[in-house]
Amino acid sequence: MVSQNSEYSIQYSAWGGPENLETGPLHPPGKLRRGHIRVRVRAISVNPVDWKILAGEQNAGVHLMHLLSSRRGPLFPRVFGSDFAGEVTESRSHRFTPGERVAGMLSPLSGGSGSTEICVRASHCISLPDHWSWDQGASLPAAGISALQACKPFGRGSDSGRSGGPGSAGVQRSPGRVLLIGAAGGVGSIALQILARRGWEVHATGRAGQAELLKDLGALRVVPRDTWPDYALKEGPWQGIIDAPGALIRGKGEKSPAKLLDPRHPGACYYPVYIPNDFIGSQLLRIMKWRLFGRGKRSAMMLAYPSARRIKELQEHISRGIIKPVVDSSWSLKESSPASPVSHAMNGGVSGKVIIRLDG
Ligand SMILES: NC(=O)c1ccc[n+]([C@@H]2O[C@H](COP(=O)([O-])OP(=O)(O)OC[C@H]3O[C@@H](n4cnc5c(N)ncnc54)[C@H](OP(=O)(O)O)[C@@H]3O)[C@@H](O)[C@H]2O)c1
Image (cartoon, rainbow, N blue to C red; front, side, top):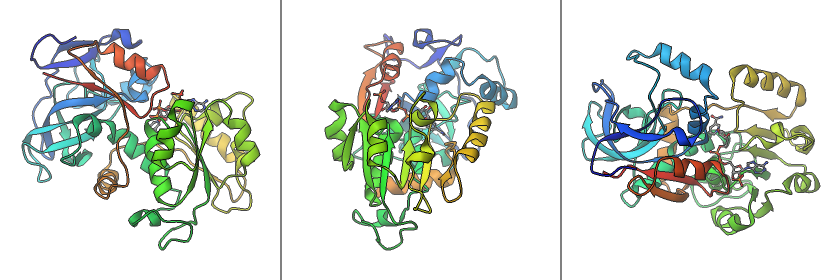
């Protein structure tokens, strides 16, 4: 817990669970480089990748990034987090001036958004609408970028205006029925809004208590979280499946993605957002998927990264009101330790994002 106005970082000194998190002295963000901005961080969100890195599950990537870092110091203590929202205090970029409200994402492998002060590449940040809170801003970068990537194979023309249906002008592939597994989570809750806007008929999985939210976000049907495998088989085949938690590739005895996709639909596509923890595992998965999917069926693996192009796309979707942030809960470090919100996020049943406020 933070007891007084101060500058600090949420940090950890060993791989493990949320109990390893503590607030400590600010990790100095260093000199402001060209094209970067200095940000007073007000809120961060908790992403699965953050607690996977904390657990040491992404060690190969973390060590590689550490080796490549130009400002290499000791590996520990490390700063928790990747998403953030806050105000610009200094700028060496034409994109933002001091006082502007921004949100963005640091590379999860380098990490470090959980500090009251950070320096970040301006091209990795979006400008926050005036009516958005810090919590709402911090909820969106990683989930929004990932959702946009996950929705890439699922037509994009009809989001240029009112909710479009099949056949809307500019749709690259005519929308059909899509099964969205994990729709109430960080990525799912944004992907649902994008798909619905593009005219896809979304069948979204979630818990009973999340049904109203999912319908509000655009789901045509809400499928109970624990019985969706039977529903998927009974109601299939599907023109598309987005699998946020990777349940179909991880589950034992569950249905195969290939059997659930519509063989007559040339663009039928299975898209897992989850990637295995290690690089070798992901390569094996890729080979496996080549074997799983025959001609005419598609599958892809994605790696979300805040490139300038993706940030621009996210900004456009926000400006046009296509996506709205979904915040599960907001935790102040004046009232709780950093472990509490992270445990809450890890326990599941969360709708949207869990936020940690860096009050000071
Ligand atoms: N490839 C990439 O670049 C990339 C980018 C972002 C995220 N990811 C990964 O993608 C995954 C999802 O991310 P996220 O931010 O959406 O996570 P999240 O916020 O934790 O959401 C996951 C959702 O999936 C649901 N779920 C879990 N197991 C399920 C099952 N067997 N059947 C049905 N629903 C299930 C969860 O429901 P409950 O809470 O009820 O369990 C939750 O609603 C994570 O593993 C994350 O690390 C990858």
